[in-house]
Image 1: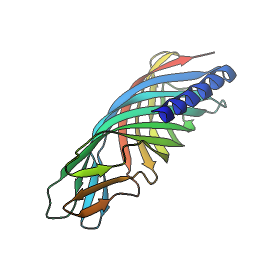
Image 2: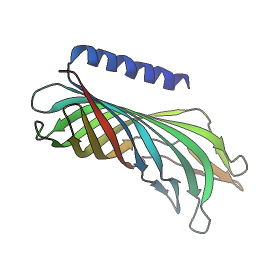
Image 3: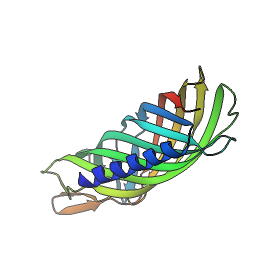
Image 4: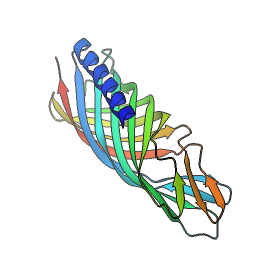
Length: 211
């Protein structure tokens, strides 16, 4: 938890410096749906199930052509299940809180119009925090796992006024080496690793500040 607090404090400080430096800023609280994802291993798989996704995105202008620097924080709460082999049922292991903290570049198109398509890419970290463990069927190192993560974003903004608009987007987040979970039962141990592709669809209200 201390690691999460330090990361959020660092992000807040970076946002403060950004606001102090650039006049135009967009703040967008967002909520949506995180698609479930699966990691396959020999004869089975682990699955992070679909869940809600919410957070906040802050963008500030860096040039008059629609370029923006973007800071993003998103949170999801999802169950992790395992299917140890093709003959076994899918078994619940634990529940995760997942914190995504990203910084990146966003390019807006038709920036002077009401409808503004955009695309971007980012990098940062994902913090996997287990909430409970099925002690009979599984084992887990209960500490948080902080992993490097990068992402790709695409969508559109629509502005009702100079100050208010909506944002709809799809985002693909790719944590690297997210794992650290293992399942053990009857002397057999199955470990996870690799990457889980995390696709989400979100929307939110844009509040534009500055000149």
